[in-house]
Image 1 (cartoon, rainbow, N blue to C red):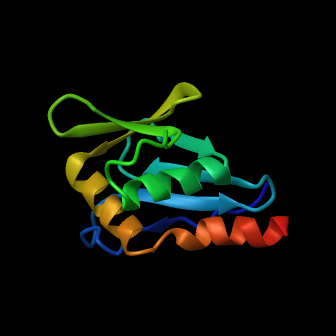
Image 2 (image 1 turned 90 degrees about the vertical axis):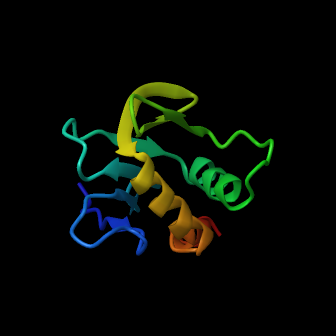
Length: 121
């Protein structure tokens, strides 16, 4: 099993849990988790789905299905599910989701997709 190097957005408050992303080069998958999620859920997706999510967050209002659906929960909670397989749910707060989105828009997670594209070439 490969060791995952998790990254969070620089927009996350210091010391707080946040959404984390990691690439598993052995399986060619991308993982998302919330370090403060008591269930410890890890959403596993393809590089194509993650790339589409990044594009959709960078261009709000796009009609392209991101493949990962953030949906409101109780209070300020946000649930992330892969639309093709909604069995795994990562739960975060609106504040942490907003920090992740700011990181996406700043290009902080682009290298996860770039690494995957380089390996496929």
